[in-house]
Image 1: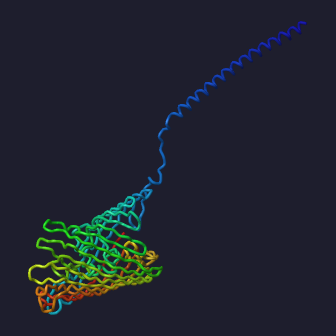
Image 2: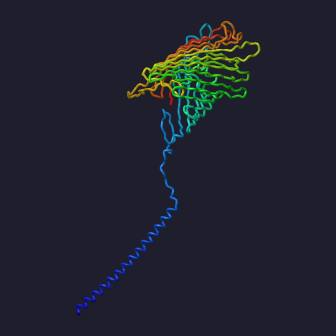
Image 3: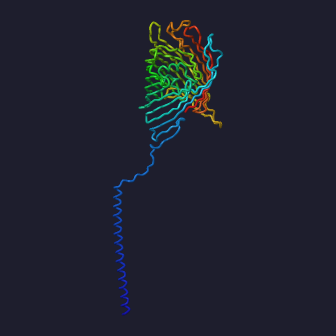
Length: 479
């Protein structure tokens, strides 16, 4: 019995211990549940606070519109925004001429004339092109540190441009309006050193470099139309003793036929000076030019100051490219309405001239046609020159015949004052040349011209013309 009682007491003790353990576990479970509930409540409160608090600012990656691109566009350093709305570019042009005139005597016909420089040099152009654009607006600013002669820095252009729809561009400021085929070519692309004299003279009526202009151009793939109202050239308003000039320039041109091998160009151009610039002693107009080079500044054809109320010019233009051959030419007529004064005869005057020029790219590259100017550009070397033997660049042979006649209403042997005409002279130039393009930016151009100027003095009795040759080399860098 005692053994049974001991077992019973042992079982009772074990039950009591187990009961205490169960009570302890229940207490721990209740505490854990309470802690879990408190944790859930705290988490819910934190979530509510997070939902009602704005997120902190954080760094974000740049969008494409914020990224700036720097690259070379046809050799020009260019910066644009990522979306292309803003752009800025820098270009340059340097043309350095050296050469001289070859002549046996000061003049011909038994009369002396001033000798031309036997050797000289001239920084023909040294321009920096600054371009700034925003969407369809463009600002162009181009100073020029060269010239004819060099040494007097000036402004080539400063103008605002707006292109509301393609291919229309409206322009306001100092600008070079489009006049004829030769004048619409970039000076980097000339076949010879200078424009033909008749073009240089005619564009000076109401067009030319740095001309105050307002107007526009429509430059489509096949047709080109440009028109501008113009004023004075930059730097002409240096004195209050003169009044400004007003004029207009227009050009219609295009390619009625074009294919891979051929570009046929036709056009017509004209200008009108409504009100000739008035000097202190009255309105006057002077037509003159150098013999198609700028190393020597002598002008051998010259009308002198003409008392003019108005003047006009017009002429057709023609161009043809077939593969690596190119031919172009123009005829221009200039009319001057002289102002009347007293009994002195002052008839209307008419001058004229023209040129034809061509090129053969020996290495086979074609001259490119630019629809933005409706004119031919220089060839692009298929194999740029490389000292390692990669290529020899492009080689081009050129030739030109040009003539301009500034004589009108005169009779040999009679003074021009008796008829009211002018002995301005007649000039013919036969030119030949060779160009080497090592790459798209560098050019070396050698020109040889045969010049014949037939001109009488104001009395109509003495020959003051000249016959001579010129030889010149131009080194050109443009981008």
